[in-house]
Length: 417
Ligand code: ZN
Ligand code: ZN
Image (cartoon, rainbow, N blue to C red; front, top):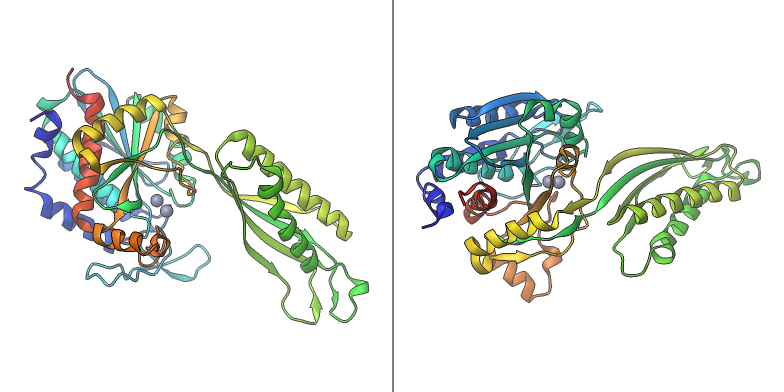
């Protein structure tokens, strides 16, 4: 047995307790920035395993430190928050939780992105590493970040003094449930997840009677022109073959058929994989919207508001190679290379602030038989994606795979040479 196998030999005994902990988190999901109970639960576990624990970093953020002699400092990150989604999975531990959203409305809440699984795996890895301190040296730094779904939690931890409160990491690692067969892990060097910009645009017209268009400036027609013209950003301005997306996900204007409203509001979602392309797309979007407003005779310049912004997740080549080699050694043919993902993630902000390399990998989210049947039928796109009400990773083997992946990756730095 090598060091990794020796550490993982401790998995079976407390597996039931780890599963019970996961189910409890799953039934008590909390929205971004409100992860109070969740943070208390993970901090309690870290303390139980012998970690020094810091809480309240950037809101509800939690960091554990286990210093175990000279050696690298390895940061492992998971996320605390859940989503305003009504779970529809039918399992006996499904979430029935609701909460009051920022606007006062009661909303359902569920761990529809698997952050409960990420936390449970990270705590499982922390427990195993703490119990086998004679097999490694260095410092293990499990980090639980709030508000990943809203894209401001990582920056919040940095602004909240994270880097002054923990030892300087040498590398940062994280994982996420992604498309694929449960039990597999997948790495990807270089740009892995897209940069994302969510933008709210308000364009102005002049209100009038629906029967007197000559007295108004119609923002509905203006919005329609903008939506059509924005389709040319990807098709005519970006180099063919580069993956980019512009989606107008929301349009709102007017109240009834015989009133021309005085403004329209659009919400845009923009995805890209390089900073120059991102800048070019954002500039094109501004140019098109301003020009369409002029073409309509708009009485006022449009307003732009950035609702959320995620940086590019760009996996360091050397760190990724190291983790991929360790995964192949441990998982064999269950270690895969993944394609780029069009989703986004704010994890990179923390290692970027610390000036250290990072890598982020995927763990498969779908039962093997279900996945293979869908693949055979050409219906992989029908499988429940992250954020869907039907999203639920199979507890076995996923909890084990995610725990093993974290220990295996951390040991690529912490194993004695
Ligand atoms: Zn998510
Ligand atoms: Zn997520």
